[in-house]
Image (cartoon, rainbow, N blue to C red; front, side, top):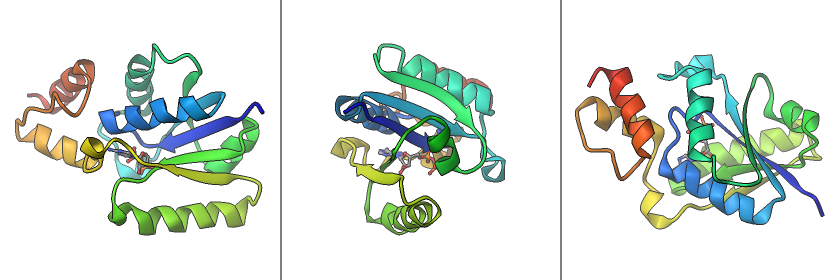
Length: 160
Ligand code: ADP
């Protein structure tokens, strides 16, 4: 069965945790669309074009992965792209409550779309873009969390 999956998120910026989930997803689905939400209320550090560009670079060797941005409800975007699956990453128990609420809300809005959770390699299970930005702003070495071009982009954005 040809199955398209959408992996939505803010990706501000992409980390090895996100990349690990994309790798796992492309083993399971015939096409993975990484969908970058504009999310202005989250006040992202990188604008949506920058976040898309970093993700495209990070996934350039993956055969069946597309990266694009979207606005509005993710279930509407899924319908537009004829996808029936949303992928979300689950790191720790702390992700569960928010992800559970969101998955059930999306199911209520659109019962034909299923959310599937994937867990990253354990070493990425504590990694978040938020924490990454915090430690990077204080000058930490972030080379084990993100590809070198993301590290460079982050340093330049933070003036480091
Ligand atoms: P959002 O604002 O939608 O939460 P994020 O970019 O923070 O956007 O996360 C997108 C998805 O990737 C979420 O499902 C999140 O749980 C998952 N994710 C984020 N970091 C990691 C990680 N280190 N390992 C696995 N999944 C992750």
